[in-house]
Image (cartoon, rainbow, N blue to C red; front, side):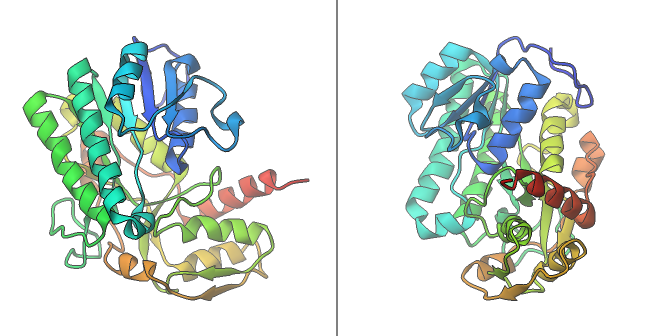
Length: 330
């Protein structure tokens, strides 16, 4: 049996957990959180290539997996009998715009392969992350509702919107317990940026702690919804451990924590690093950011399964800088 979200006691699942895309920004930290919750040997990390630092996933099994290889996925499911699959493998927004056909193939076909395999093998639950990229230039930017106009104009956003509808369809047609969150920009200290439009909010901390200036690729007053990684992990695990009858949204839940601009995160950092300097040179990612929400209405997540974030901007900044200092070479 799984623990409840507040428990820290290690338990053994009647089967295992498979995390696909385990070497990404979210994957590395989710694997660690799951291995704290369960027997580490029951949490199987999988990715198309090994982690750059083997120690990152050394606490349990690791398997090579290209999610587009259905036969390999079938083999791993038969071997480990997972009760939960967290499917995180994707090409992010800015990267997918540079390679749109592969972005669509990986993001869309990868999801369908996982959903089909889950149905075929009787996997109990699938988690798949969506994104604020599902919204578009005609979506209300402030306090963006759960249900609203959605006309994404990036390959990443188009694939995420289609994926949400597939998740709902597999739940309705096959009874598959698929759950999803529309993540805002995610900020963490354990991995470097991975090709997203909100990546500036990760890189800026690394530059500050290294004593360097930062050139931002967004305009200083560009507001975007953001979230600190501990809150993202908390939301993901709370969602996956909520009783099924509490999950009312089977496309994907809006998820919010804070919204800020590059100017505001700079000011927050300067409270701790007064000499830190930022310049602005917007590039193609500015157009992507302009089409996304500035803030999110996540009242459905709060109402249905009790979502509540722990971090605001200044609390996150303080925690990020402490951890990044600890990671600096002596």
